[in-house]
Length: 159
Image 1 (tube, rainbow, N blue to C red):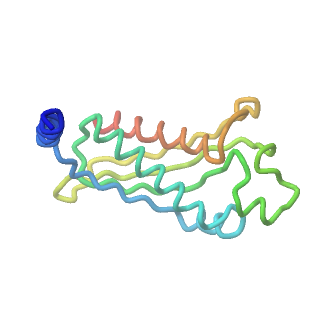
Image 2 (image 1 turned 180 degrees about the vertical axis):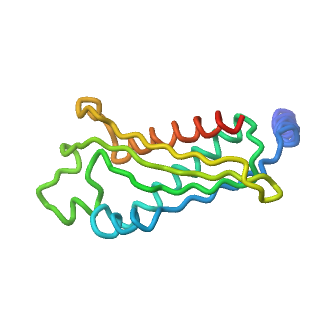
């Protein structure tokens, strides 16, 4: 019982010591990329990608103490390393395990302070250029790499 009380007290103290994050990250896909999602990749992949970029930008900006209140991120393009569920359904010859391709993404973002004033813009794109680097990749490995690089470089620009 004493250990549980001590643990609860430590957690409460830690929670009070951590600053509250006021950062809001809003991610969306561009209309052109939405068409590509609808026609080929699969509309359900939009949620996977926007959640991934939102999480990465939030984590990096919070960890580095970037003084942005709101960040709007737009995924302009993304290419999967492995066929998506929709692509495998549409083209039975694709193998979700053995079919691979070079992937990546193109992302843009705008950061705002608490008053709504724009404090920075950043555009970034990266696509793998060597198929031998794709071995062992999941569906969106290269896109997630792009999101991480985007978040870090955008944070560098705002620092």
